[in-house]
Length: 96
Ligand SMILES: [Ca+2]
Image (cartoon, rainbow, N blue to C red):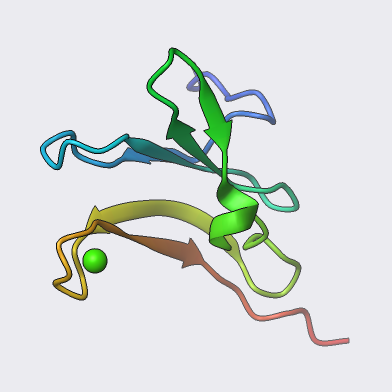
């Protein structure tokens, strides 16, 4: 029996900021090849807004550059604010 397959629109992974800083949380959702990632900002009114394009993390799944596989939040520059590290699975373009 083979494992269930995910629908094409299913994200590869999700990563959410911690809630210990007191600010609004963000959830990063990586997408499949050719589709944009999303960065959902919790607007703290029961809704979320996708700010992935504004943050520069939406269009990372381009031909020849691999696809986003996941992300890790952390304060990488030690300024007290969480930063997002997106890791990708890449490949070399086919040689004609
Ligand atoms: Ca930081």
